[in-house]
Length: 225
Image (cartoon, rainbow, N blue to C red):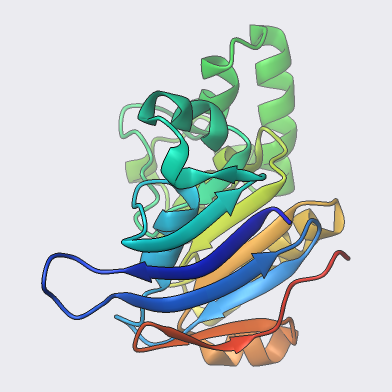
């Protein structure tokens, strides 16, 4: 399994638990929606996977490693095996779409000619081939989201985590984004996509993990495609 949660709890101080007794497995090549209303714990669950939070109780393993035993200095290397699409995009304002999407490759030390060729192809794939030199401020919300997706998948991750990737776009754009995730999944990347838009989940018919008040009430395990 790529991800496994075993009796995972998350709470902050004496506050009500954010997540309670979570059991979860995500298999290679799977596609899952993570659903629930705002405040259900979706973002917190994703943060536990990529290591920005640690469980109050229980164990989270990623690629077979216990995240609680992973030193902070080891997290960047672990995260390079992931693709993460954040709610707020986190694009660098003074960088073009191409430069933002290319950042993971450049940080990994790839040759510049390979970077430009690969990123140009990927921007074409997400429908932004003619916007490569645009700054984030010159892009619509949907276009910014597609740049964020391109950046997240540039290293061909085994697992893609997406936190409300369709929350800032209209329904038509949302469907286009979801089809990009489906195409990526067909190429072998496992996808865990958090959303509160149940209509999109129902339309695609993919397996669903449903959170309610911090508890996982639907636990269908993602199997390999």
